Image (tube, rainbow, N blue to C red; front, side, top):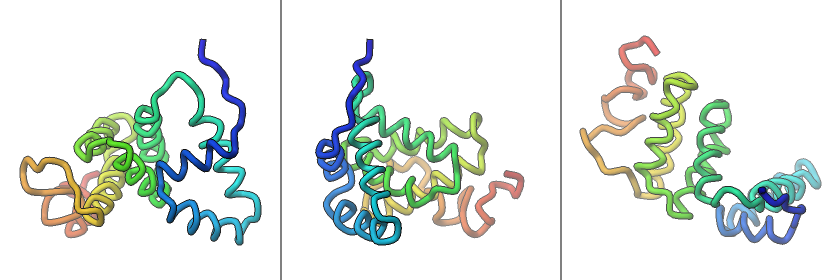
Length: 158
């Protein structure tokens, strides 16, 4: 049986610091708190001090599930970008992140999978990391499928 974790504010902030780094904890949360006082603390406490503290899934597995959920949801690119970076920080390989997005295509649709790949590619580019290249093209760059040159659609049909 999976043990239910009580909300632990301090554990939430520690985990967020580990996942996202001090810039997010100090910068992003402070800005959100100015806009919506108390909301950032609630998010950190409930998610990172609650859900993420539960037994049953390793942190790596939770991050992969989060990548899949945010990609499937769509329209949450800033949060997906944060979680791509968080996943890399805890050792998820870029090629694994790409495979999560590719695996989702038949379940959530090609446009959402391509949008997820674009977010991942931008984060990889900024961080100077990337999956092992097999054909020299990456999503959102060059002239391959899913690029800005063709409006992000392969063959204009997606």
